[in-house]
Length: 369
Image (cartoon, rainbow, N blue to C red; front, side, top):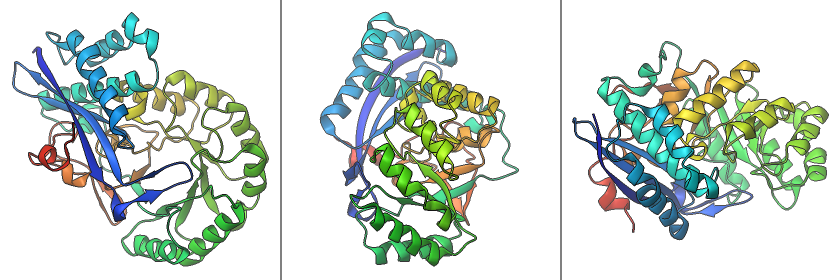
């Protein structure tokens, strides 16, 4: 089997409710920058990365897929996924300007597409190809809510609706200019969902260490399950200080680009829930390495869902460090087999591949140039 062509694309898909905001970002659409890899033996593969739908930078990722990586792929065997990942990642001219950011996100789309081909060629869903079992479903926590641009009444109503829908855990955004406002939001949501539903919070890296230390010491009152990205994404020392100072576990990883980044946090005792994102790390190949690193330290892995669940459902079902799963349904209308949660449990995909095959109308509905 040989790769014959690659066809990049960009989608901008509306998010829930017309627009959302956390402490660092506000958006109306989610960006999907992807690629279809064609072969001479039948199966094609689709992969993608996720962005904030900023078209100029989306085009840079697309162009990197097409013009930087593409020429190195044509004529190669797509089943040799790990070898191709090493070839692309270590291409000297690309590595010189890359190892993070645009080049890494472009590599992610390609790597996912190759794993999609490999699973289709084996006539298996990817989670099965990776050796997983669906006997014990992943528990989903709802992230499609809790936004900072919502009123207190909206937060409470949505939290109750999530519980009524069967979710056993939900996440709430924090990071307001006035942390006392966030404590009131946490208290209101905890009162609404009761003590049996897990409540996570996410600061999106907004606050400095002194603010986080003062704030986090109050979290035990509300039985907060984890505090995600409490301070600046790359600050290992600050997260380690916080982890030693408070009882609430620390979750992070969505903004990290490499195995080495994760190793530094793990070795410093600066993270308790490891959240790798295949769309930022460079694909499924390095995601699995990060999950193995976490497992070796007996740390749980909860994938960050910048892919809006399609890819991460497979690796999470397959990897023994994963028990929980982030639910954000923004891209369900794009795929032939959208990720599905019923009564708070992830339903394992059944079609061969990585669940990334687009519906025929996705490009006409959401495609941009």
